[in-house]
Picture 1 (tube, rainbow, N blue to C red):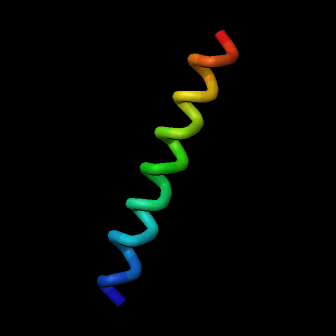
Picture 2 (picture 1 turned 60 degrees about the vertical axis):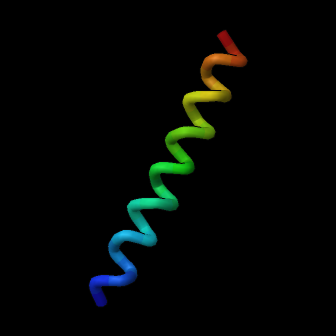
Length: 27
């Protein structure tokens, strides 16, 4: 299932982006 791999990586990338934004707001 090669299609499921990029989907998971994309979702993880979005989670990291939102986490970085929250970290900046907290600081």
